Length: 269
Image (cartoon, rainbow, N blue to C red; front, side, top):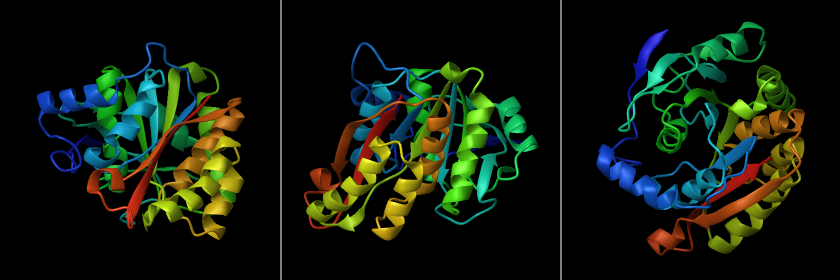
């Protein structure tokens, strides 16, 4: 496979200098002394100035184990629609995050859905912005980044079942992170109203309901496909509950509440 993926969002979405990034992450990840053993995490992926605090609260609430599967968005339409990253590692200001190559091979070998692709993630920030949080909390964690372009609900839930089958023997060693922002460019009231319909389905652990609600209500939740996969896998792994950790929006930074992007952190356990 290809060597190390070079960052594209460093110095833009988040600080590109190790000391500054560590200081910023330290502020975001201040949280409880005891962290829940979670199966999944919904985490936003905007620039840290907008969504870093929301993401940090989510990561602070969970144990980050040795392997983190990150389900991102294919914003650019590049490559395989269910692309398991083909790099050996991802470069970050905190040092390289190693990709779990054996897990990658195991996932794609028997899959009719996933394929290895080094190109799908090349420009993708939705995956990259999650990696420093993982690296900061657990420097030894390996990652498995997956870029998801979409698909019908049956294929997405089937993809979730494939991931669950991959990790069912030792689920305590894994965390799935579904990277998504919520409503885009609506008034804060309208965003909250629409997002509540999606969040309710997440809290009900209802992957099909989430996907169908987002489609029917035209909710601009960009990572609904990855979140559907995560919820499907979590159900297979015995998830019992989901809990909202934070819900916020860009208006709190920009001062414009007429045209916000909304951000959500949810843990599934």
